[in-house]
Image (tube, rainbow, N blue to C red; front, side):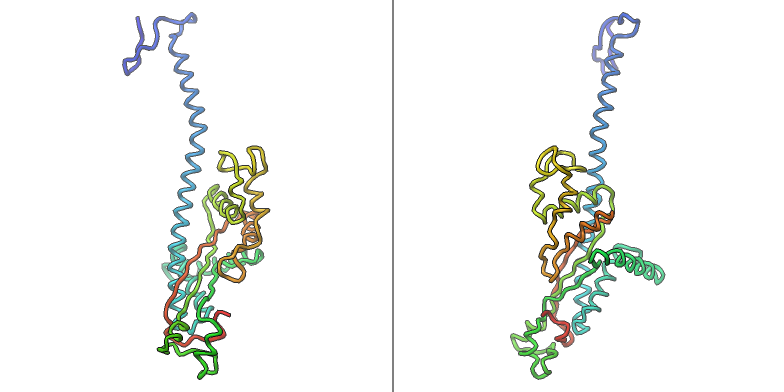
Length: 277
């Protein structure tokens, strides 16, 4: 008599020579194939989930950087363009969205953690939050601030050139730490390789261990870190310190610079000592 499965499909007729139904080995073979397929697919699925999580957090960091730039500009326009006050405002803005900030004690703990992070970054020549002023520029003070000894400009000067000179334009760079395992290393390595001009040489399907040049070439991530340029221009005098980021990565800390720009009109007199050179 024919044997059928639950779906009514014909499996086989009769009994094998060892007394076992002939279709049982077939099912065992299918079970083994499923295990092999799962062993191949599951790690890739887990890695893709981790990658999606890290990219989502990175997008949140970009939004926080925009908020930080806005907060820094609002502080700067009423504090004569003081970069220290702007940096404080930007720092509080990014921390308010990334760390506990619901009370005085929580704020104190968060600021202490920031100081500890800066202490870790300092040996690599990095700082967690960087504020750089693009405008006002120093040459404008001699022209529009002549009546103030060239040291400041009236923020309410209505002359056409003076209105441009009293715009505060700044740039925020926040070194955001990538903390999702595996994904953090991969995302930072892709960014470094792209900036260093090596990404087009990556080979292989293994996203956790790509090779450089060929399928049997050297480790692409390690090589990208080693061969990355010292810095990439980004509008600041020092640029983005890729070599320092790579050094931090070798120490197990993965950072990615997140940038934002903002412009507002001054509501207090800008000082030449804090202007863009």
